[in-house]
Amino acid sequence: MAELKTLSIDPIKCDGCKHCETACAMRHMGKKKCSRPRIDVLGDRSSGNFHLPVTCQQCIDPPCLKACPKKAIHRDSTLERVVIDETLCVGCKMCVSACPSGAMGFDPDLGLAYKCDLCDGDPQCVKACEKGAITFLNGFDLHYPKMMDSAFKFVGIVKARAVSGKRGY
Image (cartoon, rainbow, N blue to C red; front, top):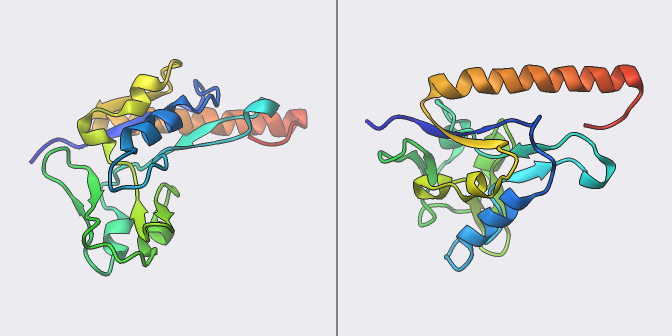
């Protein structure tokens, strides 16, 4: 079995430039899949508010996989990533509803769910991120502590903004 690989996001470093979204969309353009980005940067760059890139966390026990009635979602043996078999997807959106991080999308034109596929092991969002806010890590043990550190920093920023009267993230 291959080691789990995943993206780790440091929202403290993200400036909301959305270069990751563009790189992702360009990587998937021209394929049968939609060219919508599989990463979504939340926040408003013009206001200077907090920015949070959201993408699939490649969950150890993926709720999307359990929710799929057609078994179109599985973990592949190459990267241990969670992937969608588009030939089996019926567009019911159960996986979209089940995703705890809001990282699953649905393309109404194709009638298919979509999510981060880690660009087959060469994530373009990582290359496009000049601030180093997105990294590609091997192993959950590396990812989890970094994820928790970012979460605690995020909570600190939210609390500081609340105390100072600033609104938004």
